[in-house]
Image (cartoon, rainbow, N blue to C red; front, side):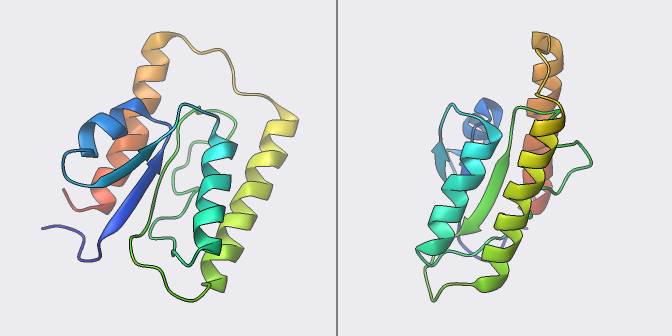
Length: 127
């Protein structure tokens, strides 16, 4: 069973890119979590809607360097709910980053964070 609505995947997670790029439109950028959220906000201003919450895991935004977010492929009128959620997520992420920067994790831990982030989206897509 697949997510009914066509979507675009925005991510800085190499594993999400690799896992989903054959089946979905994936926009991958090697950048910080906050930058991915700003990319999502820009797309919401263009008329896309959030399909997954930007802070949907229990991992704090300053702990993981990866974020994968689904948005609608179709554009419509500005969705104020999506805009409020992404703005709040950006503010929350900034607040956490101001308290403590993302640690310099070992590659093994980074691999785990990639897997956690990718798996959350895999579940959202019902794959």
